[in-house]
Length: 432
Image 1 (tube, rainbow, N blue to C red):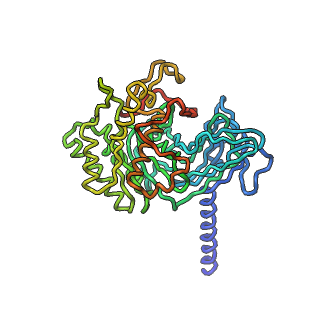
Image 2: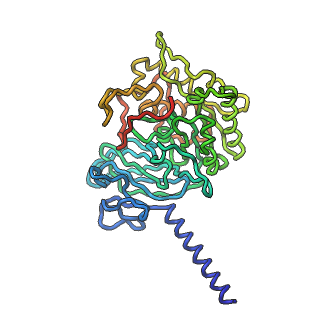
């Protein structure tokens, strides 16, 4: 009996050691992209043959006949990791040539844009990124839409996109971090991480302006309302990840206004469901922030924006005031922004493109709700200015190159540069 007990202790110790090793393997990686024959000590050497597979757990991803896996061209690199926040450090540069490198993650979340390096020059780009899948607990999952099933935001991989006119990277490290404040985003197609060109939303641009000491987790999805977001268990999944000191930012209204059932309405079901977000955040020690819906591009004959959201912006303001909740009045800032651009130039902030701008696009695109990358970039700055009015603690993590923004004086559209990702979709996102 004594020998059996000792054997059990050895087996238990072995299992603990194996689990610890497995955990270390799946939450921390170091990759060497230098092209040398031998990897830097403690790093995994990446070669063109290092292709992602479920068995391998890391490697170049989305490689096709027309996409050569190399750190000298735009590429995707994925690793299998559990849900959580991960600190990513990327050393960009090359000992033999100059580079211009853009870094994005998961579903086109922007972190660094066009980082220039001279021959032999290296720069370290650090950011913290959130990774999640649909699993809530046991066999319970988020009920994602069919269109979401291929989204990088919902798979088991953490995917880094290295883009730019001349991408050059030397190494990449990925390590789990649990002590940074997380800003959870809830909303619709104006907030969601859009996977495909030419669509974009503010939730995937705002990441570019904060350093590695804060993390954004974007749970928004196209076509969602406050009640369908809850019904699909997106909020339930989010709440399994939230911790004291985090933020939950909520923007709905676009699609909610179309609900015409019994009990629907801005000051009825909408406000009731918005309060659920507030209560659940506070219950867990997180700070709720309500955001009024973004304006649509809708001008009258005098060149002024016409409100198209019925009572939903006012209901959001009313709830914030009644509950003592932080409010970002994006609806008001957008009016200033679009009117400053004017009826014609404002098309440059939305998905307005002539036919054949993108592959398979036989007809012109003219969407007055959904942003292109330039428009989403402007809206993200409006959100930051709204945060500044609230004097949020996380503003200390704004990057030094963030320039104060005035919606009455938007950035020059002609000066905006965006490196298209490989994926394009002509079908517009759900919602309007």
